[in-house]
Amino acid sequence: MRTFCARCGRSESPGRPLIQGLCPDCFTTTRRLVQLPERIEVVRCRVCGSLRSRRGRFSKTSLSSYIRDLVEEHMSRGRVAEGINRLAVNKVEIREGVALVTFSGSIGEVTLNQTIRVEVLTKSSMCPECFKQKTRRYEAVIQLRPGNRRATTLVSKIADELSAYPNVVEVEESRSGVDIHIAERSTAVRIVRELESNYVAKVTPTWEGSKYGHRKPRAVFSIRVYSISRGDPVIIQGSRYEIAEATPRSVVLIESGTSRVLNIALNDFWRQNPVFPEES
Ligand SMILES: [Zn+2]
Ligand SMILES: [Zn+2]
Picture 1 (tube, protein in one colour):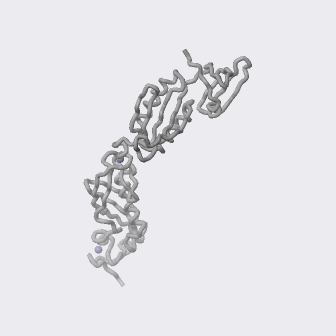
Picture 2: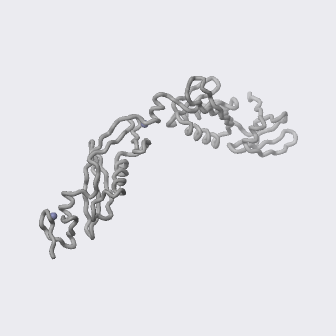
Picture 3: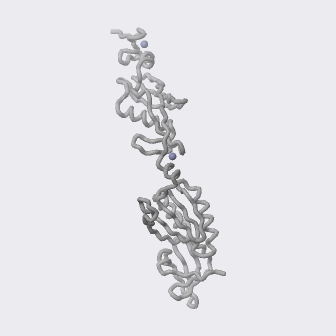
């Protein structure tokens, strides 16, 4: 029995299988390979351009990959036309207000291609991060201080580098050092860890109470950065030593008089309250 396309009347053949009674050409002109909404709404941060996912989180994804994800979600939820196999998104093209999504799928040995047009409605908003930056709210402060006089330039250099960080809302210089305000505590923690692993530094975390009337107390990290050279004197519990080596992890000391060599972890070194006689 010969079967024919219900629309154009051409007969079915191995190169022209029927899908839901239609030949591949007629199928792709009249039906959709996958059911997609006519229009999708996207919420975009007007400051940084990040897009809000449907779970509510903003991320720095491009509009085309956002739409690709959304379309693939529709595909995985079975919105694919019956009889179509191996449906895949080949391309997502963004034009003004429109996304053109090109699919390929197959029926038997025949490949079908189709471009579906979806209207994209972009709503302007502001992501929480940009909002925080805008209102200059901050959850944490890093108080960067020179541990010894020589470290003053090092502190300015570090502050300079940190001012370029995303999430840093303010860099405030004071006579004793530099205060860095950071929108999110987690970023502050990351910066503190970075400083700890790159410099000879002593970190003292505290909290700043609600004395300014903020609902949440702020995390304050006091960081003393040291610029230590070989041969620098240091006094620990009345004994005088000379620095042989100082790294972010440990300190090697030579006891004056006895020439005894001590290798101690930096944390243990700080615990003994070392005093650096100020270099002249
Ligand atoms: Zn046809
Ligand atoms: Zn933003």
